[in-house]
Image (cartoon, rainbow, N blue to C red; front, top):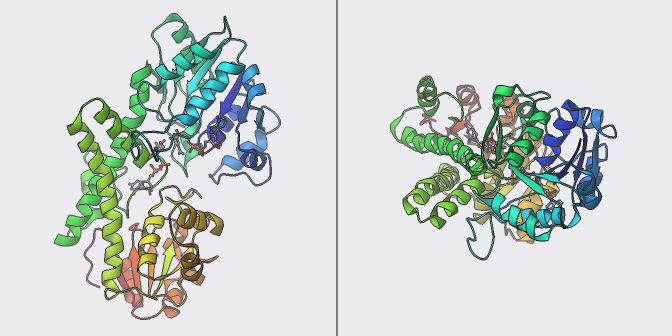
Length: 462
Ligand SMILES: NC(=O)c1ccc[n+]([C@@H]2O[C@H](COP(=O)([O-])OP(=O)(O)OC[C@H]3O[C@@H](n4cnc5c(N)ncnc54)[C@H](O)[C@@H]3O)[C@@H](O)[C@H]2O)c1
Ligand SMILES: O=c1ccn([C@@H]2O[C@H](COP(=O)(O)OP(=O)(O)O[C@H]3O[C@H](CO)[C@@H](O)[C@H](O)[C@H]3O)[C@@H](O)[C@H]2O)c(=O)[nH]1
């Protein structure tokens, strides 16, 4: 069997590397139109930081795992084709700001139709709106060579960045949506046989196509909803003296609620949650279900509120002005153990602080300066000259904090928990403040050192 994966990104790369690792009898080729990305996958410096990924890629590459820009040639020889391209939120036109931009999915689908000379099983791996498979089928049928047939499956990916390899090796479930036809069932069995190399049969769930597509949006919306719920409660905690960690812990002990995804924070980031909820909101609006749309939209609104609330608190605690003050930002990635910065809360916070003319000194163990510059200047609208004057990037937390008025913890990197905060305190301006946007620091210890400590969801006397 030969598998082609179109899209060598955060999903295509790790997912198909794990398939190659677990299925030595299958040839897996991951293709992309981005030459630079493919070159990086073929180098010693792979383009994605993900614990455990490098080891798997280095072990399989050149054996049954290949990275290539030969999209057409790979489609031609494949039996199964994963479409794992990006589906960002549309920036213009109908549905701008909400709907998913399906241009990349459509381009990949048209390419498959044009090239295929034999039957292909086309698998939606990208996160797409409900009933996208129907559009893909129409495109394939209308553009294929005579006699060439296709099956379409939905196989959404549930991996989280930072734990992608663990999630792929031990998934809670693998979901395969298929049409209720003989051919659809055969296609589903073919894909099931791939996952069955390592995933227990009872964890491979099969549903109708549309249920599978909707499940992906629903799962992300529900996960994000839990974060917005606890974040909304964090505001009540600060106002009342309750402690959000205690509330989350005690709520999570109820087996019907469970403990996961109840960590209050400066707000969720990442390329998926916001995009997929907005997608669900748009779908609901399109289906003339305004109350449903409004319900889910509130999850995003609460997330924006949380980021803004935290940024305003920093300014307030620094005597209502941060002009020319130095603020150390600990962490730029959207979560720990990844170098991905898409929709990171750090971007929003730094934009806010720059508008107040603060000096920003950033440290992140995995995000290079070029990425920060891209996110803030190219994508984030910060003036280049302003960035050059007010933002510096440092190679350690200690260096970033030197001479600062405040440290703001934005990403929950483990190393921030065990820094020598006495050493940091000594080199900061006084009063020295620590704002813990992730609830990871030993605040009582920091207070004893002399820090003024401010933490989401806790009204600590500082
Ligand atoms: N990032 C995640 O953790 C995650 C998890 C689950 C699902 N998803 C979903 O998976 C999809 C991919 O996400 P990602 O984070 O991997 O995106 P990504 O931007 O990292 O990768 C997508 C890749 O597809 C390539 N591409 C686009 N059009 C192409 C074409 N026509 N032919 C060949 N290559 C093409 C791009 O060059 C890019 O390298 C999205 O729909 C996303 O919502 C992402
Ligand atoms: O209790 C929590 C859990 C997470 N977060 C934040 O939420 C964001 C998203 O985290 P996470 O879900 O762990 O990472 P993602 O890689 O965005 O993964 C989500 O999005 C993927 C893309 O669709 C899905 O496949 C995953 O199942 C889903 O968890 C990050 O900023 C986290 O810091 C919190 O603030 N509190």
